[in-house]
Length: 309
Image (cartoon, rainbow, N blue to C red; front, side, top):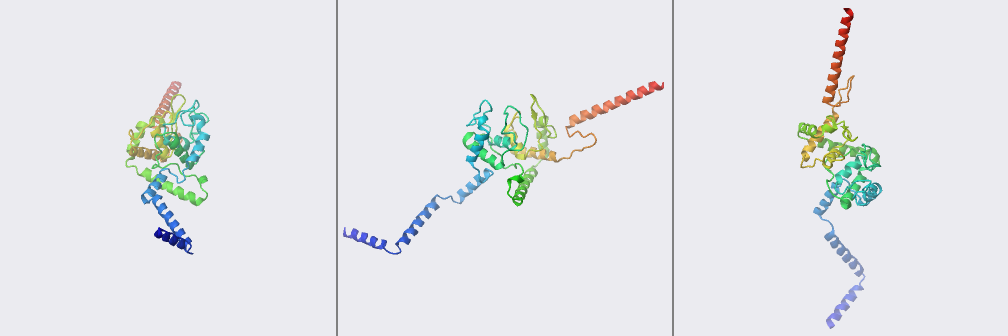
């Protein structure tokens, strides 16, 4: 008992020491420092978080903002949980790739979900679309994911505060675009894939074409590599889906590289410029016009000979 009493007196005396307050502060800081070091992410964990952030395509992905966009622009047709309503289809299994494709091409939101919508400028920035996709994948459904390793649309000047930031983003995009397109090993394989699976709807030149029931296959001139890839894996509208088991990712790269190469091919032009409507159609028109001229010349020569006789 005496020993315990001496211990208490010793602690009490030390507590009244002028430096006691500093010691308490130092101990408290050490305690919180050790605690933070224990719960804070290490190098591996930090790297994983960084990679996860890069996978969204945006270091400021905001699921709450994505929810606001969905409630404002999507829920009235597709329902609050994406299960569909009388005004719009169920989207719980379309995947983030379909969301990105439809919104980035301006086809959605739509005032008439039953009608095929043409491509137009998107009403949302790419960052807002990432937010919408993040909300969809967290709360609504699942399916094909956005192929972030494939270049999307080129950056727009209106989304940057100054010219320097825009030029830097543009240069980065162009580098990624060229690396992806030039990374195709054999564009001839891409041509064969395109002519086999795509040309009968989108035409040999990618200028689009008519389908049944008043529908149409859109032209591909303005589509980014990512949008073409997303269309293949999600099958929008009447287009069949070509998942990565049917056409593998490297084959899709070949096909996309061919489409982009085709877009850059100049039109031969001339007096009778047919806008590259296709070899078969152009050949048929040339054959018909040529034969008609031959028949007309034969009739004219025959009529002139009869008049002479």
